[in-house]
Length: 343
Image (cartoon, rainbow, N blue to C red):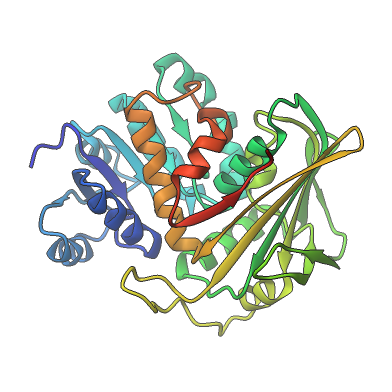
């Protein structure tokens, strides 16, 4: 197989990486699978005989260069992204190819914008961090909801998850983020990320059907506090998480996701409900679907396809809402995601 049009999936053997490889295969896109464990890569290649295997480690720049050699783009699915993000994006910049990751680590997302904006701009290479359920989807929804608005006082992004069976990668990434912020909580208010020790509070949130009214933990902060303010003039970004999902995540004995259909998805259902407010006017946008890990795959792969086709709005480091036409992108996610946008 020629790799000149191939997309490299780094971290291909992980839970989300496997969904990304399957989505690339479904779309007929040539794929190179990479990561540190050669044996696991070979086992995955046995499931997808047309993929190319190129092992690489983030502490070995030459191996990353070989993995990306001649490829069209790279999708980084290997967490913790505080460890992998820098080395893989640097390899992408050396190769002159687009970089997309699925990071939901707030500090790693912020570092991508802070540390690589200038290099990516000079190289004219698109770099899209957090192109995933957390970070990317909320950013696209808020961008679409705002429409022609140039600013808003607040953007609420509420996550209604019927359950949350975290992967080992989610747990590892969460631990890294917890340690990096010294156990403190984080919020985006008055135009800046601020760390605090306030206790979490609960409130009711009226989600669209099929969830309806649910109790949520307010300021259950996710990557949206980085992606949304990176290009939208929003003074405050607030996340809310259904208490059922938050409790699942907190419990150390909550099992990993278990497939219930031919696509490998779990039975988890989600509704992402966005509410933006400006000058006393409110606008809402929502998305619902099945399995937050599985839906990350069409988000990341659609992003790469659009970048390679030249269907972008900017270059350098940019979030989903800045890089793509938000409403059109969201509609392209059917049938995996159903969306309702302002008219």
